[in-house]
Image (tube, rainbow, N blue to C red; front, side, top):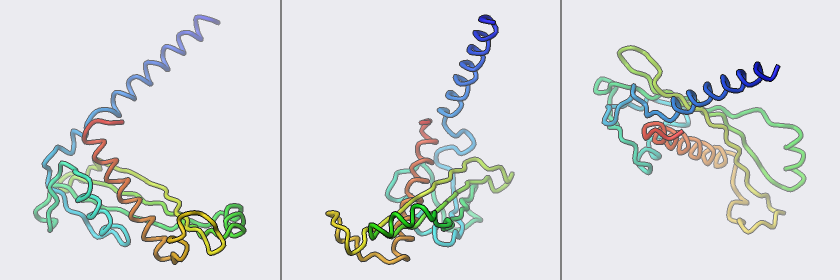
Length: 169
């Protein structure tokens, strides 16, 4: 019994070690200097472009798909409201929005997905009766909350891309 448990533990340890070494490896299918086109991503592409400028990613972003070796596509969707959280937030005068955003980078010739990252964001703004020090955000509209969530999601996706290219888990 002890021997079987020990062998199982060793097997799990080896599998975890292999997984961690794989996730720490840089993206070999997306080499530095690759030419990448950012496709139209309703509600996300402008924020993704801005994030690639703010975060130094070792890729060359091109204006047309014909110039590119890879293409970035993505989606962002507003998630259904959580009734339990909404009641709590409404009682505190807080407005929230939840987004689920995913980007993919594919090799144009082969169609192979070389990078995929999904981000879930929760953006909230205090209401008028909230006494938080961030009063300037108290008058944010639903559309500005969505914009803030999309900007945050794009920034996190680009950061994950940079980390993956540098071999960080």
